Structures are given as structure tokens and as C-alpha cells.
Image 1 (cartoon, rainbow over the protein chains, first blue to last red):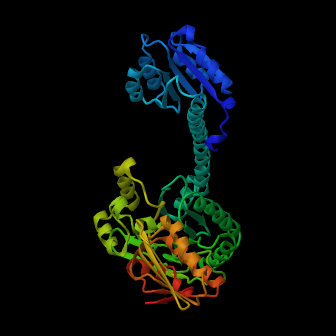
Image 2: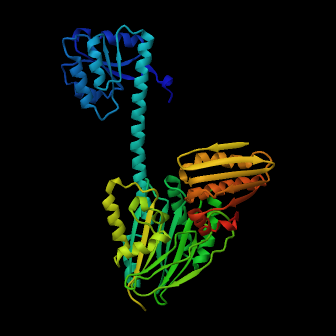
Image 3: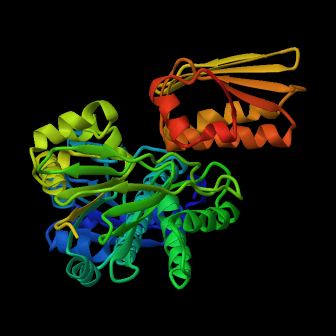
Length: 388
Length: 110
């Protein structure tokens, strides 16, 4: 709202006076200027409680008796309400107190000789700022609540503990994951689904950009995949279907990188299709062998009718499959390592057979709150524990 | 028309002569460049250009949002019947375009 639209009759003002007999003089002046909601108190009462209860837009410290220290009063109020948007104006003709008053972060210092219209205009300015700050704080509070709920919903889209336990038991694999939005919500999502006695599917998706828009798109793709689960689909067919549907849903410039693969524990294969995602990494902890899968492909949602290649990688016992969002390609600045082609061998050498997720988690912990990731982070590690 | 910009990340220059639009993008093209990139997409639809060359030879880094911006320019070009060519993507930029198989939807000159 523009400052000129703030009306004096909508403002609440609390006048604190250090001389009881003069307490209503300023009130009368302000009433004549159309300020209607005015409360006058003297400084001897429970001043802080009064201010807390009244929650005025503006407190005016009316210094009419220099003998009684208005500056001390001012300092007390400011200190007590240091964390709030309370605007405090000193109304005084005590010139010697002026310099000190400003040191207590007052909003304004107005002398009684000021013209009526100027007084009105200056008070309205501070009232407007205070009301806007209150409004923004309320909005921020509401948004934080909404975002907490949305993030909780987003977490509920991801594989739950029960599903992971079942998958781990049924297929004799270990599944770990790390998921960290860089802002409030994430544009990444992943999922895992049992297919039959010896096969399960795993997918990872990363929408362009970050924040709310990308996060809302993750809900869309989750629904689209759920819709497909009742059908028999190959990796390439799933990508073709999702791509055609997303093309109609996403605006130009938006797209998703995606990978869906089927782990076959009977044949020790990972058969997958990819749409410009990061390369799946196969890492054998014993032999230290690293294999990078080809993940090239037009991202989902750009053009309809795209065919996606199906690729297959054979893995050994003690191999881990890593799927990850593109932050880990380029996060040298954030975490001190990256999965870039040039760095990846060095990374796994440093790891020396240890699982990846605890290592990355430790890096995150070490950085603690100082870490502001430049993108969403998702990392999935599937370890095949036995050969069939 | 000759326009130039200097920013923290992406820098660009637009030159339009005799129906050819030449756009040079330098530095880093990331999600922070959405507003600046509007000047580029707007230029694609201006004047009577038949050809648009986007020179990426001095672009050091592109993220997925940057690739999305190229798609927006492509869409604008398509609607104005302008043929768009991406020229000389290097290093990480070349790898990203290759990974996303952008050569199937853009003419890319190496």
C-alpha cells in the first residue's frame, strides 16, 4: 500500500508523557489532525506492559519536563522492544536531548513548533512503515507455515521407510539417500518401486531452476508416474510417456532431466533410459572400478514424440549404483568435491571403499549452517550385496 | 542495432545487420540471468531478421535454467520464422548441450 493511503483514523498511537498534567495536550493536537485511536499514559505506570497490551503503531515520548529524564524512558522502551517493528517518536523542544535521542534508534525527533501538516505527514510516514512491517511479518509467518507444510508433503512423495525396508529385504540391496533443498522446497524428486520377484525400478528427476515453481512440478511428475505404475512399461516407454505429458504441462523454457532404470538382481543388470540426467555411476568398493553410464537424451517437456534409448550396464557384487542431482557435478565450491569427469576418480580414491552418503553427509555437517547450496541436492546409493 | 551489457554473470552483445542477428553471450548463463535474457529473446523477434546466430564461444558455464533460456529464444525464433544457430559452444557448455541432445533441436556449429 502506498504511504499516502495510510489514514490517520486507522492508526493507533500511544503517547507516553513525563509530566502528568500535560498529558493530553499532544493528544488534542493529534485529534485535530484526524488521529482517532490515541491512548495517553504517564511514565510512572507499567509502561512496558501497557505498550505490549496496546500494540500501537507508534509510540510518542512526549518530553515536557526536562527534569524528568525522557531519554532514559526512551532507552528503556527501545531496549524492551528492540526486536519489534515499534516506531518511537520523541516529541520535545529540549534541544540538548536531541543528539542523545537519536542514539537510541528513534524513528523521528519532532519539535512542538512544527507545523500541523508537517507533524501529520511525518507521523503518517512512520505509522505506514510500522503497519507495513507488521503486515510483512504476518505474511512471512504465514508463508513459513505454508512452506513447512509443502516441504512435509514433498517428503511424503519420496519413498517411505517401510517401502525402503521391504525393497532392501526382498532384493538384498542397501538403499540410502540424501535429499536437501537449497531453498525452501526442492525441484528434485526420486522414487523406487518393486516390479517383480527379481526386479525393481528407481528414478530420479530434476526440474529446471529451483524454488516453488520447480517444487510444484515435482508433484506433477509424481502423479504422472503413479498413473503409469499400473501399466507394464519399459524405461524408454516411461520416458516417452512422461515427456509427451510434460510437454503439454510445462511452459517453454521449463523441462526436467530424468532417469529411470530397472535393477535386475537375477541378471545383475541395470537397464535404463535417460533424458539429460547426470551419469549413473557404478562403483565397486573392492575392485575400485568406476563405470559411468551414458545419460544423454533430450530433457522431458521440450518436444513431443521423442524416442529415448534404452541402455544396460552389468554390475558385480559389492557394486554401488549412484544417482544424483547435477549439484554434485559442480559443487566444488559448496562441498569441496564434485562428480565431474575430471574429479570423479579422485573422489572415489579419497573415499577408499567407504559408502558415499555418510561421506557427503559429513561434508554437509562440517559446513554446518555456513553452507548455502547453489542447487537442490539429491543423492541415491543402491548397493548390491550379493551376486546371483 | 547494437546493444551491450555488462553484468555479474552473463554479458551479451546484440548486433543486427542486413537481416542477420548476431548475439554473443559471455561468462556464466544461470538462473540469475532471466531478466537480462529477456533483452535477447525480445531482440530475436525484432526487425526483419531471417537468421539468428547465438555465439557461445566465450560462454564458460551454463546451468539448466540457462539451457531453458536458449529454448525460450528458440521458441521466439520459431514464431517469427527466424532460423537460429548456436555457434561454438565450448567446455562445460558444449558438454551440457551434448548431454541434453540439444543438437536434435538446434543447429549447432562447432
